[in-house]
Image 1 (cartoon, rainbow, N blue to C red):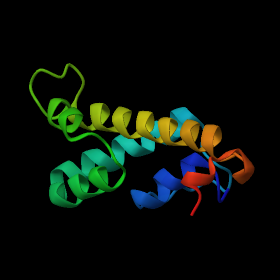
Image 2 (spheres, helix red, strand yellow):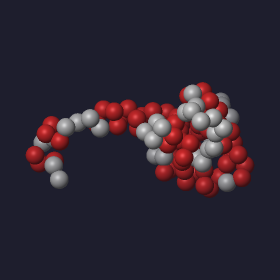
Image 3 (cartoon, rainbow, N blue to C red):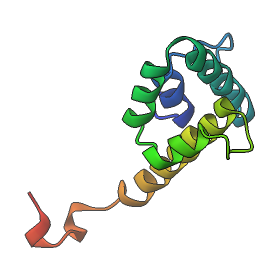
Image 4 (tube, rainbow, N blue to C red):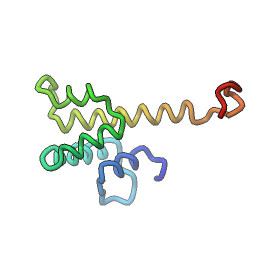
Length: 109
């Protein structure tokens, strides 16, 4: 479960789950919604710090917290976290498999 994308979210947001297996995407989303709802009520500053550390765009965070967002704030923020994690995994998949021989000599370290 080390490279499991759900594990990154579970660790970052300090979510403990009862199951031994990785949660489904729907379960993970619900855990994340619940955790973010709690954080909005009890530790907003830390939540914002986590969102920034997870590279969620600041403008999207502001919109998610605005009255213009149709979803509740916890749901909107959880969607942003899930979407960003999917983007990160896609980028890793795309660029993580490149062979060092495929890189221009000028760009090598």
